Image (cartoon, rainbow, N blue to C red):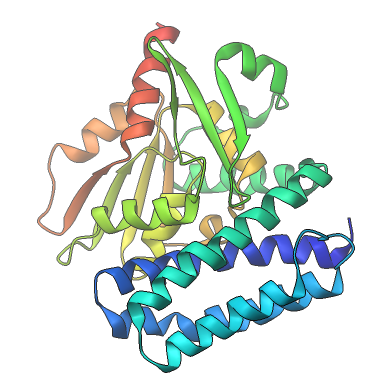
Length: 297
């Protein structure tokens, strides 16, 4: 894999997330908010198109003419302030192109290259974050190496999504529960975080870390708020360190994480809530956590 392809892959992840947010606001007719995203969309689009053209042998299925036609259509709709059409073009053409490019890269490459150097660094940062959040001896959680075959036997399945990020499914007595979408993870995280957000809240108590996407997005939407996350499944925290880009989340002093295996810390925390505190349940994590707790018993 060339450095250009790797950079393009990562840029596409970021661009998809931004574009999907803009589309949501266009659909809601909040045009000023949607237009705030468009300069960054345009900037990243130029980088993506340059990358596709410079690696034209790698991306043989992407024609120059179709790229230019798509770009011209988006520019014209924007100039005409036809935001219904603009949202359609972003969703049906640009997002489809980006997902196709991501899937092509993932077919051609060993996706593990993204995570080889990330795991140990993120485990160390997560251990420090857990200690700060009240977890006793969090380093013990990461003592044993991550064993994919063992995790698969225990009912954990990690999968690559259409946008290039990872999701994980956890076995339950009814089958399995996906913690995040298999398609546009960034869009799902955006919508989940919006459902959590409260105008009066200064502190958010979140049950369920998953791969951290909804937590990171909540921190973007509420940058001044404190976010305390409680996760009962240590294997999920290890998988997040292995397969999710957590650097910014783990460096955010407003976010605390507690490994709460028996749920006691969560229940003690939510018993007496202040008016400025909001309780947020990441329901897939709650479902999966309940199932795994029952199995452990």
